[in-house]
Amino acid sequence: MNANFINMFWTFLNETKSEVKKIAWPARDELIGSVIIVCLLVVVFASILGTMDGIFGYVIRNFIS
Image (tube, rainbow, N blue to C red; front, side):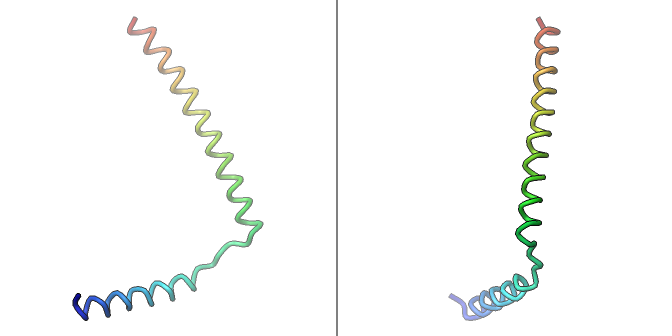
């Protein structure tokens, strides 16, 4: 391996480590609230899309037949 590549690799790792330390991690309560909201929205949108898919599929099947 090239010595320059190894130096670049270690520089990258050190810079990544310093950037991760700058992250403002959410509090536990905030994280749990966000996860609940995301899960609820996924269920709502999946229900909407599933219903629309069923309706359009029914219409297309009956239109083609």
